[in-house]
Length: 160
Image (cartoon, rainbow, N blue to C red; front, side):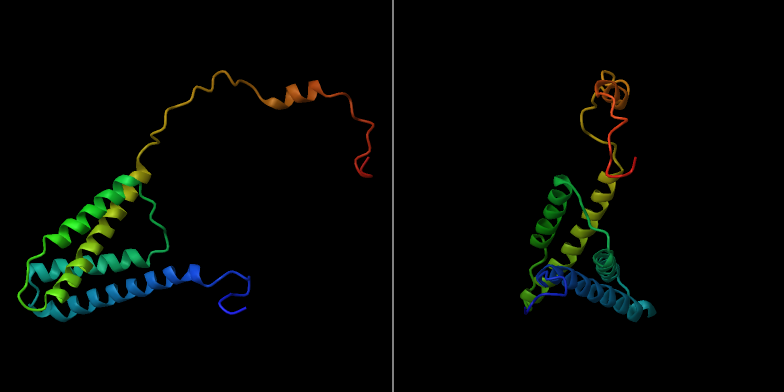
């Protein structure tokens, strides 16, 4: 059937992964290339910060490990992206272009923040209420063996 791989699964689940890798390589390549071109003295602090964030965002997109932050991580990253994009300076010419550039920068910054919060959450101790297991002493097998009748003479499929 069209649109299916050898296992019969649809190809649609792989499209987000392909897009993530393509965008990751694009951001990484642009970040490295622009930093390398401007090493001769044309680096301004704003240019440097933008392309380092772009490069790091691209590298995070290229990692195979999935981010699993909690609500706090998503909330903080979302606020950074929205507030950062909204606070961009209005430009008289090419405002759509600058809006896209601001969105890319703040999206990468939010992704980096999401990564940091996700790693921090994984390293935090468990936050669930501890359970008292002192009432569950011993192993269950001795009680189970004593409760069953003697089955030593039973045939186990010709293995006796």
